[in-house]
Amino acid sequence: MSRLKQITEAVRDAGSLGVADLAALTGASEMTIRRDLEVLAAQGVLERFRGGARSLLLRGSEPPFALRSDENIDAKRRIAAAVAGLIADGESVVLDSGTTCLEVARLLHDRRLTVMPLSLHAVNALSSSASLTLLVPGGRPRPGELALTGPLTLASISALRFDTAVIGCCGLSAAQGLTAFDLEDAAVKRAAIASARRVIAAVDASKLTRTALAFVAPASSLDAVVTDADGDEGLAAAGVAVVTA
Amino acid sequence: MSRLKQITEAVRDAGSLGVADLAALTGASEMTIRRDLEVLAAQGVLERFRGGARSLLLRGSEPPFALRSDENIDAKRRIAAAVAGLIADGESVVLDSGTTCLEVARLLHDRRLTVMPLSLHAVNALSSSASLTLLVPGGRPRPGELALTGPLTLASISALRFDTAVIGCCGLSAAQGLTAFDLEDAAVKRAAIASARRVIAAVDASKLTRTALAFVAPASSLDAVVTDADGDEGLAAAGVAVVTA
DNA sequence: CGCGATTGAACACGACTGGTGTTCGAAACT
DNA sequence: AGTTTCGAACACCAGTCGTGTTCAATCGCG
Image 1 (cartoon, rainbow over the protein chains, first blue to last red):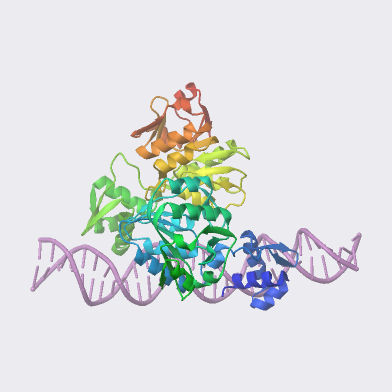
Image 2: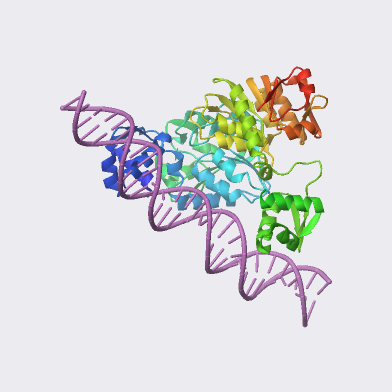
């Protein structure tokens, strides 16, 4: 586990911690801790005060993108590979934001597809591709996450009809449906689902037991769920094809 | 001058050249030349054949972004600084694609503004800013250039009204007006001009003697031109404020 | 107001990365 | 078949990044 993540969690759990404590915990020098706190403060993870830092992470919110991107990386890769396998050449795809979908984007780089990613991270991953047609949606990128949201995004999505939507989420269950942490994000996901003929959810197993604030859509609006472990059997009952990567 | 640029020009001037010739010309080993040819071929600059490469650059087209970005860099920086000085805090700005406008973007990073860049390069330069509101237009990014074009881009621009448009171009004169190499780009520039109350052109002096294929707008639609050397006096006569950086 | 604790700029060191050259077996033309 | 060209693999060098140390400046508390 990276030191940044270690610090983030320690500060979150304790509420606030001193620089010396963190140095002792991680084994790094105080100067290094200060530099770490600086980058975490820039990411909005915590707030510095003289002698230490206090957490800004609410229990209901998710950790910032940079800290999520390389955790559970192997599970995400497997899920992404399975999702990429479900997509046929020539399709048009709308690709949600989030770290799992970013891995999907990387696998689509050399495919012959039309792709509209909903996050600038994925746009950047795909912008050097010669083989695929890249469509950028408009919108306002959320800091760190770089997920595009707002009326421009909704307009871009609803101006088009896709063969497939690949959706990530923060929570999914048969009972609660698809949920997201961010309200604006939820609206974007909803638009993507509405504009696509087929909807695939890419969800690592930890999300199958969680429910987030913003409701996106009922589980029945999904055609397939790709996950990395056996999960909610209720999903299959709702008519969703469950693929275990 | 970088070796890539040297190779590009030599191949363009000769039509086609052998690897050995290029190695002798640049002083690099043949292996290095081959690697260079590989990247230039990926950029669409030239086409490789056994023993050498032939140019794909048409006389009327412009060299690819990666090769333009660091030429005349000091002039571009000066122009960009002058442009940034013309923009007041709180304004909303639409920022054209191109290398000069990218330098403007870098200078706007920590300002308090609303900015819609028309190229993904500029989007990336600005996406880490905490102080400004970044708006991404939709569209299809042109390979290499990453300039956004197409109906989604036009729709994004015309949905908004900006205080200022900063426009780059490929040619500008009082007689021929503003011109661009790419037709779709020209349409985007035109939309940006139409959506802005004030239009500033950022143009290095070499463009003041050139005219490109696609007509964008007459010189009279500009409010100011920022350039790096004394140019066309006809512009001032057309009611354009000429700023020499 | 003064003293101790904390901070961040500056420098040093080591690991790592990217670009270049060399070698050599494979592939491609004549 | 012979010759040339190509590119993968390795070595090497320089520049960069991350980390630790030092020290002067700054902050906050008594």
